[in-house]
Length: 118
Length: 114
Image 1: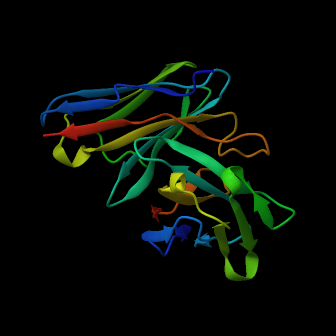
Image 2: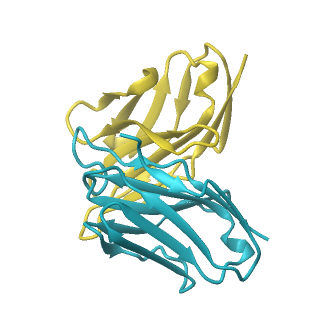
């Protein structure tokens, strides 16, 4: 398996523009997670899906952020409008169970998208 | 409040030296505990996890961690560090309840001197 795939790997945009981050989870994984990583706040869970349904979006910072999972093999995280404080690395992860809750499961992370908002 | 504390923001060790990274958690029950590693420019990779049973857990790359309930700790150790171990290390636990999710520490950055 190719692992979790994220695109783009790097995104530079100007304040006010719409940004869309994409994620393809590992086939057969029922859970998909979006994280944001910054120096100040560390790794934050933004939202996670189970079988394409959002389960917990309490980490989504504000209405400018939205996430969708139209099918089992694709998810997007959209920021509209973007602001400089959104600059961060955004990770997508997938797993068979919610946190790797078996001896053979774990959350598999993608390589991340580094977003810079000017 | 549920939280993970990694007291050391940054650690530098010499290659071949032993390593211990500290992790303390705050939680009302025995959690499921994890250590992840993030190499520069990469995503996170699971090193090891503790669910139950033997409190000393073996992981990949020669790492181990020991769960100590009395100290609410899950420290990561390696007897001899290699230059390739330079990375960011994250401790996390899985909370209970309806919306289960990993609660993360802020990470410890490890530098290895040749």
